[in-house]
Image 1 (cartoon, helix red, strand yellow):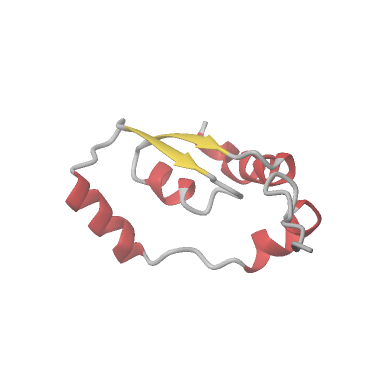
Image 2 (cartoon, helix red, strand yellow; image 1 turned 90 degrees about the horizontal axis):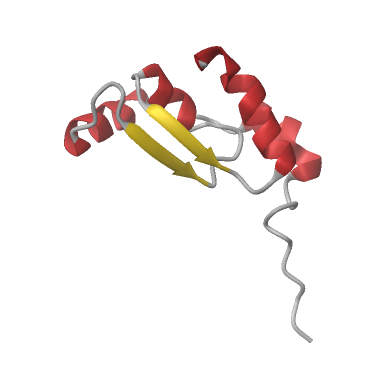
Length: 88
């Protein structure tokens, strides 16, 4: 019998607070390198697919990108909306 796979749209629902509090971000050097290599400029549009709590969206927003987040998990998306609301 095949093992049942967790539903990707709900598997973190009951762990959002722990995820948001303990998931480390990415090093600033990564974002600096991405910006330089990609040629991104302030105001450029970026899609963050599977954005979760917005760990990647935050540094992109700080650098002036317009970030469009796609997150199928309602609880994760609400956390991202709350934590990133200051960038509106």
